[in-house]
Amino acid sequence: MDFSEIDTPFTVIDYERLVSNLERHLLRTQQQGIASRPHAKTHKIPEIAKLQLEYGARGITLATIGEAEVFVEAGIDDIFLAYPLWLTPRKAARLQALAPRARMGMGVDSVAGIQQAAKTLGTTTIEFMIEVDSGHHRSGIDPHQVVPLAQALADHNLALRGVFTYPGHSYQPDTKDDASQDEVTALTIATSALESAGFEVLERSGGSTPSVHSTQSFLTETRAGVYALGDAQQLELGGMDMNDVALSVVTTVVSARGQTVVVDAGSKIMGADKASWASGHGRVLGHADARIVAMSEHHATVVFPDSDPAPRCGDIIQVIPNHVCNAVNLVDSVLVKRARKPAQVWLVAARGKNS
Image (cartoon, rainbow, N blue to C red; front, side, top):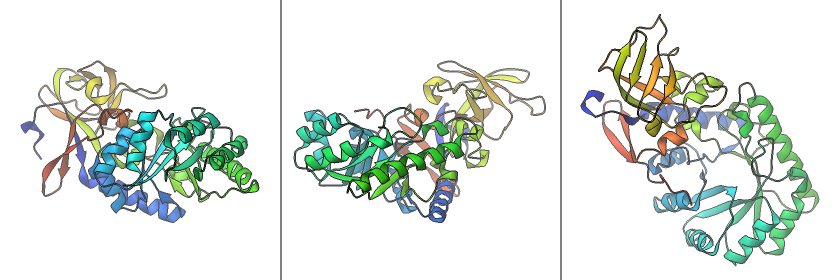
Protein backbone atom coordinates (compact mmCIF):
# COMPACT_ATOMS: atom_id res chain seq x y z
CA MET A 1 0.00 0.00 0.00
CA ASP A 2 1.03 3.62 -0.48
CA PHE A 3 2.00 5.00 2.91
CA SER A 4 2.43 8.48 1.41
CA GLU A 5 -1.34 8.92 1.51
CA ILE A 6 -1.37 8.91 5.34
CA ASP A 7 0.15 11.49 7.65
CA THR A 8 3.12 10.14 9.60
CA PRO A 9 3.96 8.84 12.09
CA PHE A 10 1.61 5.92 12.51
CA THR A 11 1.84 2.30 13.63
CA VAL A 12 1.32 -0.51 11.13
CA ILE A 13 1.00 -4.29 11.40
CA ASP A 14 1.92 -6.59 8.54
CA TYR A 15 -0.91 -9.14 8.63
CA GLU A 16 0.93 -11.86 6.74
CA ARG A 17 3.92 -11.64 9.06
CA LEU A 18 1.63 -11.73 12.09
CA VAL A 19 -0.06 -14.90 10.84
CA SER A 20 3.30 -16.46 9.97
CA ASN A 21 4.49 -15.82 13.53
CA LEU A 22 1.34 -17.44 14.93
CA GLU A 23 1.75 -20.46 12.67
CA ARG A 24 5.39 -20.90 13.65
CA HIS A 25 4.54 -20.62 17.36
CA LEU A 26 1.77 -23.19 17.00
CA LEU A 27 4.14 -25.65 15.32
CA ARG A 28 6.80 -25.07 17.98
CA THR A 29 4.44 -25.65 20.92
CA GLN A 30 2.95 -28.72 19.26
CA GLN A 31 6.43 -30.17 18.84
CA GLN A 32 7.18 -29.39 22.49
CA GLY A 33 3.90 -30.95 23.60
CA ILE A 34 2.75 -27.89 25.54
CA ALA A 35 -0.20 -25.53 25.25
CA SER A 36 -0.05 -21.82 24.46
CA ARG A 37 -1.66 -19.09 26.53
CA PRO A 38 -0.18 -15.94 24.93
CA HIS A 39 0.19 -12.73 26.90
CA ALA A 40 -2.15 -10.29 25.18
CA LYS A 41 -0.84 -7.25 27.06
CA THR A 42 1.67 -7.15 24.19
CA HIS A 43 -0.97 -6.07 21.69
CA LYS A 44 -4.16 -5.26 23.67
CA ILE A 45 -6.12 -5.94 20.47
CA PRO A 46 -9.06 -8.39 20.47
CA GLU A 47 -8.63 -9.20 16.76
CA ILE A 48 -5.12 -10.51 17.45
CA ALA A 49 -6.29 -12.51 20.46
CA LYS A 50 -8.94 -14.18 18.32
CA LEU A 51 -6.31 -15.03 15.72
CA GLN A 52 -4.12 -16.52 18.45
CA LEU A 53 -7.02 -18.72 19.53
CA GLU A 54 -7.59 -19.70 15.91
CA TYR A 55 -3.94 -20.73 15.75
CA GLY A 56 -4.09 -23.05 18.71
CA ALA A 57 -4.03 -20.96 21.89
CA ARG A 58 -6.10 -22.43 24.75
CA GLY A 59 -6.80 -18.98 26.21
CA ILE A 60 -4.95 -15.74 26.85
CA THR A 61 -2.89 -14.17 29.59
CA LEU A 62 -3.48 -10.60 30.76
CA ALA A 63 -2.11 -8.21 33.35
CA THR A 64 -5.11 -6.34 34.75
CA ILE A 65 -8.81 -6.68 35.44
CA GLY A 66 -9.40 -3.74 33.09
CA GLU A 67 -7.77 -5.65 30.25
CA ALA A 68 -9.85 -8.70 31.13
CA GLU A 69 -13.06 -6.67 30.97
CA VAL A 70 -12.21 -5.58 27.42
CA PHE A 71 -11.33 -9.06 26.18
CA VAL A 72 -14.30 -10.79 27.83
CA GLU A 73 -16.58 -8.21 26.22
CA ALA A 74 -14.94 -9.16 22.91
CA GLY A 75 -15.85 -12.82 23.46
CA ILE A 76 -12.63 -14.28 24.90
CA ASP A 77 -13.69 -16.85 27.49
CA ASP A 78 -10.49 -18.22 29.08
CA ILE A 79 -8.24 -15.68 30.81
CA PHE A 80 -5.39 -15.87 33.32
CA LEU A 81 -4.21 -12.75 35.14
CA ALA A 82 -0.53 -13.57 35.59
CA TYR A 83 0.24 -11.35 38.55
CA PRO A 84 -0.49 -11.46 42.27
CA LEU A 85 -3.46 -9.14 42.55
CA TRP A 86 -4.40 -7.34 45.77
CA LEU A 87 -8.18 -7.37 45.60
CA THR A 88 -10.03 -4.40 47.02
CA PRO A 89 -13.79 -4.85 47.32
CA ARG A 90 -14.27 -2.93 44.07
CA LYS A 91 -11.69 -4.98 42.16
CA ALA A 92 -13.12 -8.19 43.55
CA ALA A 93 -16.61 -7.20 42.38
CA ARG A 94 -15.30 -6.47 38.89
CA LEU A 95 -13.50 -9.82 38.78
CA GLN A 96 -16.54 -11.71 40.05
CA ALA A 97 -18.66 -10.05 37.35
CA LEU A 98 -16.44 -11.66 34.72
CA ALA A 99 -16.53 -15.16 36.20
CA PRO A 100 -19.94 -16.20 34.76
CA ARG A 101 -18.76 -15.19 31.27
CA ALA A 102 -15.24 -16.66 31.19
CA ARG A 103 -12.97 -19.12 32.92
CA MET A 104 -10.92 -16.78 35.10
CA GLY A 105 -7.64 -17.43 36.87
CA MET A 106 -5.35 -15.17 38.86
CA GLY A 107 -1.93 -15.31 40.47
CA VAL A 108 -1.06 -15.27 44.16
CA ASP A 109 2.31 -15.26 45.91
CA SER A 110 1.45 -14.69 49.59
CA VAL A 111 -0.87 -15.97 52.28
CA ALA A 112 -1.93 -12.35 52.89
CA GLY A 113 -2.99 -12.02 49.25
CA ILE A 114 -5.00 -15.23 49.51
CA GLN A 115 -6.70 -14.08 52.69
CA GLN A 116 -7.59 -10.78 51.04
CA ALA A 117 -8.97 -12.60 48.00
CA ALA A 118 -11.10 -14.84 50.21
CA LYS A 119 -12.38 -11.86 52.16
CA THR A 120 -13.35 -9.82 49.11
CA LEU A 121 -14.49 -12.56 46.72
CA GLY A 122 -16.42 -14.88 48.98
CA THR A 123 -17.65 -17.92 47.09
CA THR A 124 -16.12 -17.90 43.63
CA THR A 125 -15.33 -20.02 40.58
CA ILE A 126 -12.08 -18.12 40.00
CA GLU A 127 -9.04 -20.42 40.04
CA PHE A 128 -5.68 -19.60 41.57
CA MET A 129 -2.12 -20.15 40.42
CA ILE A 130 0.78 -19.83 42.85
CA GLU A 131 3.61 -17.76 41.42
CA VAL A 132 7.17 -18.90 42.14
CA ASP A 133 10.40 -17.01 41.51
CA SER A 134 12.66 -18.71 38.98
CA GLY A 135 15.37 -16.06 38.87
CA HIS A 136 13.76 -12.84 37.68
CA HIS A 137 13.31 -11.71 41.30
CA ARG A 138 10.19 -9.66 40.75
CA SER A 139 7.06 -11.24 42.21
CA GLY A 140 6.85 -14.91 43.11
CA ILE A 141 7.58 -16.94 46.21
CA ASP A 142 10.54 -19.25 46.81
CA PRO A 143 9.42 -22.52 45.17
CA HIS A 144 10.25 -24.43 48.35
CA GLN A 145 7.65 -22.36 50.24
CA VAL A 146 4.49 -23.06 48.23
CA VAL A 147 2.71 -25.45 50.59
CA PRO A 148 1.48 -22.81 53.08
CA LEU A 149 -0.11 -20.94 50.17
CA ALA A 150 -1.85 -24.04 48.89
CA GLN A 151 -3.08 -24.76 52.40
CA ALA A 152 -4.40 -21.20 52.72
CA LEU A 153 -6.32 -21.63 49.47
CA ALA A 154 -7.79 -24.91 50.72
CA ASP A 155 -8.69 -23.37 54.08
CA HIS A 156 -10.69 -20.68 52.29
CA ASN A 157 -12.30 -23.04 49.73
CA LEU A 158 -10.43 -21.43 46.85
CA ALA A 159 -9.43 -23.62 43.91
CA LEU A 160 -5.75 -24.27 43.22
CA ARG A 161 -5.06 -24.74 39.49
CA GLY A 162 -1.28 -24.98 39.61
CA VAL A 163 1.99 -23.05 39.65
CA PHE A 164 3.53 -20.49 37.32
CA THR A 165 6.67 -18.46 36.88
CA TYR A 166 8.08 -15.82 34.58
CA PRO A 167 11.70 -16.25 33.42
CA GLY A 168 12.16 -12.54 32.79
CA HIS A 169 15.92 -12.85 33.13
CA SER A 170 15.80 -14.37 29.64
CA TYR A 171 15.74 -10.74 28.43
CA GLN A 172 19.53 -10.59 28.55
CA PRO A 173 21.96 -11.71 25.84
CA ASP A 174 22.86 -15.41 25.93
CA THR A 175 20.62 -16.24 28.91
CA LYS A 176 17.57 -17.89 27.34
CA ASP A 177 18.73 -21.50 27.81
CA ASP A 178 19.72 -20.94 31.43
CA ALA A 179 16.49 -19.04 32.13
CA SER A 180 14.47 -21.89 30.64
CA GLN A 181 16.25 -24.39 32.85
CA ASP A 182 15.73 -22.13 35.86
CA GLU A 183 11.98 -22.07 35.30
CA VAL A 184 11.82 -25.85 34.96
CA THR A 185 13.83 -26.25 38.16
CA ALA A 186 11.59 -23.84 40.08
CA LEU A 187 8.38 -25.41 38.80
CA THR A 188 9.69 -28.92 39.51
CA ILE A 189 10.53 -28.01 43.11
CA ALA A 190 7.14 -26.35 43.62
CA THR A 191 5.22 -29.21 42.01
CA SER A 192 7.05 -31.84 44.04
CA ALA A 193 6.42 -29.95 47.28
CA LEU A 194 2.72 -29.55 46.56
CA GLU A 195 2.16 -33.13 45.45
CA SER A 196 4.07 -34.47 48.46
CA ALA A 197 1.68 -32.46 50.65
CA GLY A 198 -1.32 -33.97 48.87
CA PHE A 199 -2.21 -31.11 46.52
CA GLU A 200 -2.98 -31.71 42.85
CA VAL A 201 -1.05 -29.56 40.35
CA LEU A 202 -2.99 -29.31 37.10
CA GLU A 203 -0.91 -26.61 35.41
CA ARG A 204 2.77 -25.69 35.26
CA SER A 205 2.93 -22.41 33.37
CA GLY A 206 5.94 -20.42 32.24
CA GLY A 207 7.70 -19.12 29.19
CA SER A 208 8.79 -15.88 27.56
CA THR A 209 9.45 -15.00 23.94
CA PRO A 210 13.27 -15.15 24.27
CA SER A 211 13.16 -18.53 26.03
CA VAL A 212 10.31 -20.12 24.07
CA HIS A 213 12.76 -21.92 21.78
CA SER A 214 14.25 -23.57 24.87
CA THR A 215 10.98 -24.26 26.69
CA GLN A 216 10.86 -27.83 27.96
CA SER A 217 7.92 -30.20 27.91
CA PHE A 218 7.72 -30.28 31.73
CA LEU A 219 5.64 -27.13 31.33
CA THR A 220 1.99 -27.60 30.48
CA GLU A 221 1.66 -24.14 28.90
CA THR A 222 3.75 -21.17 27.77
CA ARG A 223 2.70 -17.54 28.08
CA ALA A 224 4.97 -15.86 25.52
CA GLY A 225 3.54 -12.65 24.07
CA VAL A 226 6.00 -10.64 21.97
CA TYR A 227 6.42 -13.49 19.45
CA ALA A 228 3.26 -12.38 17.64
CA LEU A 229 4.59 -8.98 16.59
CA GLY A 230 8.31 -8.87 17.33
CA ASP A 231 10.47 -5.89 18.24
CA ALA A 232 14.06 -4.68 18.17
CA GLN A 233 14.86 -6.43 21.45
CA GLN A 234 14.00 -9.79 19.91
CA LEU A 235 16.22 -9.02 16.93
CA GLU A 236 19.16 -8.28 19.19
CA LEU A 237 18.54 -11.33 21.37
CA GLY A 238 18.51 -13.51 18.26
CA GLY A 239 15.02 -14.92 18.72
CA MET A 240 13.55 -13.33 15.59
CA ASP A 241 14.73 -12.21 12.17
CA MET A 242 14.00 -8.88 10.50
CA ASN A 243 11.53 -10.63 8.21
CA ASP A 244 9.58 -11.85 11.25
CA VAL A 245 8.85 -8.38 12.66
CA ALA A 246 5.18 -7.63 12.08
CA LEU A 247 4.84 -4.23 13.77
CA SER A 248 6.64 -1.05 12.83
CA VAL A 249 6.17 2.71 12.91
CA VAL A 250 5.90 4.45 9.56
CA THR A 251 7.79 7.72 9.66
CA THR A 252 9.06 10.48 7.37
CA VAL A 253 12.63 11.76 7.08
CA VAL A 254 12.47 15.45 8.04
CA SER A 255 16.20 16.21 8.12
CA ALA A 256 19.18 14.55 6.42
CA ARG A 257 22.91 15.12 6.61
CA GLY A 258 25.04 12.50 4.92
CA GLN A 259 24.38 9.12 6.52
CA THR A 260 22.47 10.62 9.44
CA VAL A 261 18.76 11.37 9.20
CA VAL A 262 16.06 12.58 11.56
CA VAL A 263 12.54 11.14 11.36
CA ASP A 264 9.25 12.40 12.76
CA ALA A 265 8.70 9.45 15.14
CA GLY A 266 9.97 9.67 18.70
CA SER A 267 9.35 8.23 22.12
CA LYS A 268 5.70 9.29 22.15
CA ILE A 269 4.89 6.70 19.49
CA MET A 270 7.80 4.25 19.80
CA GLY A 271 8.31 4.19 23.56
CA ALA A 272 11.50 5.05 25.41
CA ASP A 273 12.69 1.61 26.52
CA LYS A 274 16.37 0.90 25.90
CA ALA A 275 18.02 -2.00 27.69
CA SER A 276 21.61 -1.51 28.79
CA TRP A 277 22.76 -4.04 26.21
CA ALA A 278 20.73 -2.65 23.30
CA SER A 279 22.68 -1.19 20.37
CA GLY A 280 20.25 1.67 19.91
CA HIS A 281 16.74 3.03 20.50
CA GLY A 282 15.31 0.85 17.74
CA ARG A 283 15.99 -0.56 14.29
CA VAL A 284 15.01 0.23 10.71
CA LEU A 285 12.94 -2.31 8.80
CA GLY A 286 14.89 -3.60 5.82
CA HIS A 287 18.15 -1.98 6.92
CA ALA A 288 19.86 -4.44 9.24
CA ASP A 289 22.84 -2.26 10.12
CA ALA A 290 21.08 1.08 10.61
CA ARG A 291 20.56 2.19 14.19
CA ILE A 292 18.42 4.75 16.00
CA VAL A 293 21.15 6.49 18.00
CA ALA A 294 19.09 9.18 19.72
CA MET A 295 15.45 9.63 20.66
CA SER A 296 13.41 12.64 21.70
CA GLU A 297 9.68 12.94 22.18
CA HIS A 298 8.76 13.50 18.53
CA HIS A 299 11.95 12.73 16.61
CA ALA A 300 14.57 10.02 16.29
CA THR A 301 18.07 10.22 14.86
CA VAL A 302 19.05 7.33 12.60
CA VAL A 303 22.55 6.52 11.36
CA PHE A 304 22.99 4.39 8.24
CA PRO A 305 26.28 2.62 7.46
CA ASP A 306 28.32 3.88 4.51
CA SER A 307 27.40 0.73 2.59
CA ASP A 308 23.68 1.55 2.81
CA PRO A 309 22.57 4.76 1.04
CA ALA A 310 20.65 6.88 3.51
CA PRO A 311 17.13 8.09 2.68
CA ARG A 312 16.54 11.72 1.79
CA CYS A 313 14.19 14.35 3.16
CA GLY A 314 10.61 13.37 2.44
CA ASP A 315 11.36 9.66 2.15
CA ILE A 316 9.22 7.30 4.22
CA ILE A 317 10.83 4.49 6.23
CA GLN A 318 9.62 2.00 8.84
CA VAL A 319 11.27 1.85 12.24
CA ILE A 320 11.04 -0.97 14.77
CA PRO A 321 10.49 -0.07 18.44
CA ASN A 322 12.72 -1.65 21.06
CA HIS A 323 9.74 -2.83 23.14
CA VAL A 324 6.54 -3.54 21.25
CA CYS A 325 4.34 -3.74 24.37
CA ASN A 326 5.00 -0.10 25.19
CA ALA A 327 4.73 1.07 21.59
CA VAL A 328 1.28 -0.45 21.10
CA ASN A 329 0.05 1.13 24.32
CA LEU A 330 0.92 4.57 22.95
CA VAL A 331 -1.60 4.53 20.08
CA ASP A 332 -5.37 4.30 19.89
CA SER A 333 -5.34 2.15 16.75
CA VAL A 334 -3.06 0.40 14.29
CA LEU A 335 -3.24 0.13 10.53
CA VAL A 336 -3.24 -3.48 9.37
CA LYS A 337 -1.65 -3.98 5.96
CA ARG A 338 -2.76 -7.06 4.03
CA ALA A 339 -1.60 -8.48 0.72
CA ARG A 340 -4.19 -8.12 -2.06
CA LYS A 341 -6.81 -6.91 0.41
CA PRO A 342 -7.81 -3.47 1.69
CA ALA A 343 -6.05 -2.25 4.79
CA GLN A 344 -7.95 -2.37 8.07
CA VAL A 345 -7.86 -0.36 11.27
CA TRP A 346 -7.79 -2.29 14.55
CA LEU A 347 -8.47 -0.48 17.81
CA VAL A 348 -6.04 -0.96 20.68
CA ALA A 349 -9.10 -1.65 22.77
CA ALA A 350 -7.35 -2.36 26.09
CA ARG A 351 -5.03 0.64 25.88
CA GLY A 352 -4.72 2.38 29.24
CA LYS A 353 -6.63 -0.31 31.14
CA ASN A 354 -4.11 -0.33 33.95
CA SER A 355 -6.32 -1.28 36.90
